[in-house]
Image (cartoon, rainbow, N blue to C red; front, side, top):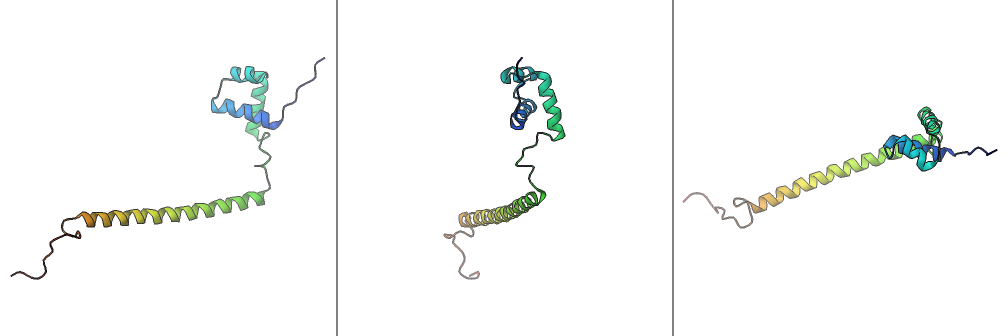
Length: 116
């Protein structure tokens, strides 16, 4: 009698995620990985219930909260840098516009005094 094959959660998650992403139909994935379509359906149910969660992502709440804080700080920093760069681009564009203007440009023939 043949022994039962055992699949690790990573393999199950990979097959289910390919099916969800549309990388192939259920029949195609079943043939490619040599598993029964009903087994893939059962894995999808387990995936939806969270039984196939990535062990790294299932870390403690404290680690996750710390990572979220770090990412939020990074987003804030990048937002501030983005705003600064936008202001710098606007300032440079204004200076170029003024430099090219015949009225305010560097070679403009401005009046040196009042009307004569």
